[in-house]
Length: 325
Ligand SMILES: [Zn+2]
Image 1 (cartoon, rainbow, N blue to C red):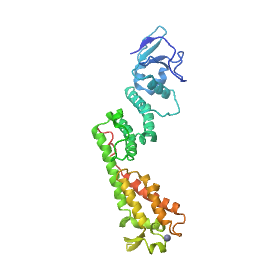
Image 2 (tube, rainbow, N blue to C red):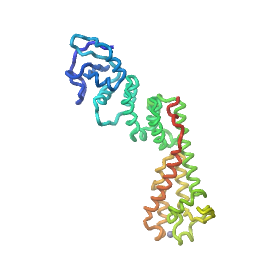
Image 3 (cartoon, rainbow, N blue to C red):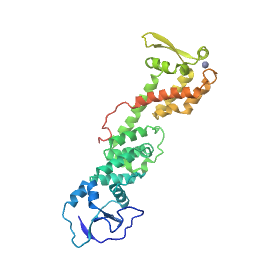
């Protein structure tokens, strides 16, 4: 595998410690003829494959550094070596480069590179903004934590609308099986169902006592409001009896609107959306007494609804669903 090669001026761009022909004790040659001058002890530390390779006697004895031809691009190798030479920042990387690094990590047994890519894929720019493609990569490279984050990010996609992400152009999708994709769709539906169910029971009997204790002023309104436009329901009170509780129609409508939104995009933060809250705020603000600090009070109530949704869609799910073929 090792062969002799003379030192050449590096074609590498920018500064890195492994482009100096006087440096290192062996050479990595990429398909586009870039040469990297690497200290074998450093790369052997990161890769058991290279460590095994270097345990063999060197092939050359004429003063030339041994060289190895690799199949990965110079861009991938530059990043691999950056990491081996303890680069401290973690740049944003396009997905095809992330795949190249994961493939190299698999080929050369570089566990630290896989860990680095796991962190990179978990960032919002990938797991949220490119959720489907990130999910596919996670499936291919057995990264269940990334798959879960990406599946969570995929909840913000409205599956009833035509795809706007150009799936047909996303080569990463070939990396996952039909079964893995089906699991993603199933997860989306289960989260949606769980969120709708949680909201359905929000104004039903079993949840109301705690709601009333925390938010009665905003949910039911003042005595004057309650005398005119507020529905009342009977609920079990904490002492085991029944209590009559007031709920403004504005909140019933708010819950219905959020519930409708959960059917297509089960994202808990939608509970805070002004498009759902503003109609309630406008109605409540008509009462001087109830309108005091209305934004703070409605935000607290909406935060409570968000927490209910978060709990509903965070229910434990099969831990290995993304890694099974
Ligand atoms: Zn009032």
